[in-house]
Image (tube, rainbow, N blue to C red; front, top):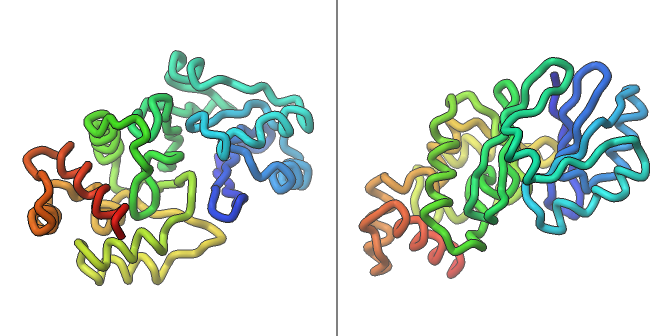
Length: 235
């Protein structure tokens, strides 16, 4: 089983999960490139999924359905099923509310497609205003094995690393990550994220001290998440 990444709309990232014959598109906005890849590799697109229902992630659905015989599967159905099969391989589906209430992640082998829940170096905006659920979703991801590869919904690596370097994290961890960062294939390991992503380090003293210095609440992980988001916006 393989994961293929496609870039579109400047920083959006689309994905195909595929085996030898069948494929699933996730947030498939890169319609032209996806269709070319399917044809070149003699693959049949069976299903179309989304990580959440924001228009920049669903923009390719209709055109992909027109161009192929793929069936669109709603997020509600994916949540209800909790897993999906492709060529005898199981994709686990996790509910990860926070960015939106309908946000989900897809876990196959050692890959995790996270949409706008977890980016490489930061996290998505909390449009639900439910920081508690967002932190719980991030904890669900943190509990996965360190070798898990994070495939996000956008490439925000450089601004995320600039923020981390300016405020909170050991510069060597950031430089190590930037040295292997490739905008053509954007990913990180969960082990890397735990070292350089401030939002996965809410428990660490440097985060608490940073927030205290800005006279922001720090009593719970939810408060620290909310406070860290405020600093990120101010920057």
